Image 1 (cartoon, rainbow, N blue to C red):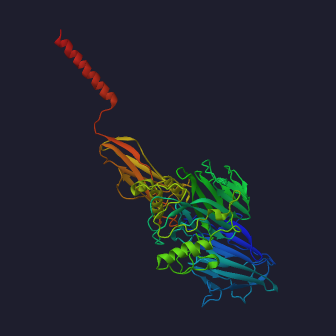
Image 2: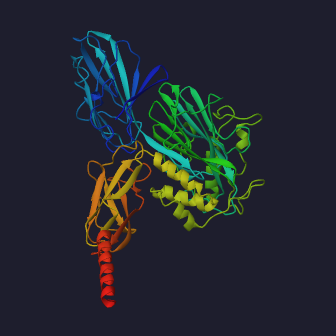
Image 3: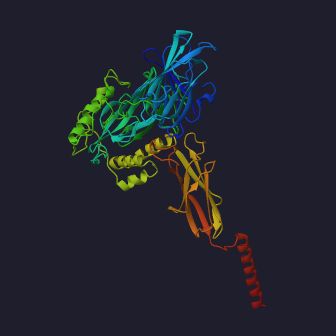
Length: 589
């Protein structure tokens, strides 16, 4: 567990105190953060005359929490009044005026607002996070000896979440909705306090017409991510192909505040607790925000199209505006700027097309005044827009002057993408590879999967490579997190596979992240042993503490019972030769 503290100016001094947990942590907030040395976390200890303060609790969703809310220090012997500020999301209890009910949370003051209590008293907060983010309440503490001395703390609950876009952009919003957005141009992907992430989408010509997206019901031509830019506190970061406009397979270009910058293994300190680092496995960039948000970009070169393409994922964020943003109330798409809702999904495919690629796309389209990208001479954000893309009800996905990507059989794509364990992400991978024929998409999906919080790696090893028929053979599967690579996974089960088929029941992992399977029933001949890990909780994009994984095959050979050792075979052969020599001398005296 870690504590991240961020400052932001918003109508006076605002103190955002974020307790961030791993994206897939099922026990975020369990226990008290007071045990962490030097970390105040949710506790707010206000001093006399302090400005109003806001503390934000953030977790991955419904989770247990206990905390004590401290107050102004008016002297160690002071007596104070406590007053809880109820809201519509945290109303006062009908039976106890000292209690607020914030969904699954209970806030209890040390006494009624008219009863003096020692300054050392605390309010207790306990329960599970509210079902809806944004619930809030306030606490006001007043010195009984001088009613002019008082201070207030406001508390708000948020939910950390993940979103992103990959391949021919398949979007996952921060509240879990999956849809395709094939627009062309530069758009605000996600925006929140202290951060904004913008993405560039480039049209791709194909000879095939892709199938309709299950969520939108629209059949369109495709685009892909070719660049990303971000506001990180007071800094601006861009990650783009060479801005001279010429295809350059040598690598993407990283700029900080417009200055071309090399990302070294030690990373780049952007100040304020923000950093750019080399992501796990290389191939892209990672931006770690001070509030716990993690932006990861996986990049790859497409030789036949002579261009770069990206996967973009955002983890552990409380930001909720943009194309990855949360759906507006009763809306089929994320909210427009200002929280405006587009309403329920229209029955008419034509109206859905106008909503998605008209109102929605234009609302989040970057302008020359808002862009975070860097450009070459004579180039603007408008240079990357293509009017009418994607085409409605297309009969062709050709683009003048651009070579058209050739599709491959779905079976080939499925083979390339079989290592993707999230069902939705694997389906996206198969779509991308089959439509474009570019098998490199499967590699970027693998990279993206490996960088997800909770991604795992499973390996299996036998106690020996060869056994005789009927002899016991023991195989040990080990499951570890990809990042950090040394952390054992101890929750979940392993299913061993013999020559591609399940064998025996599932085996629970021990405290070292290992599971064993022993057998004396292997048939004579070569075998392949593998192990498939299943997490203890639901798997998938944001669905559980860990992601499933399967080991490579481990070769094992069983030889027939009674096959004699080499030394005995040699001894018998020598004995046979001796007998033959003896027979020959007797037959020829």
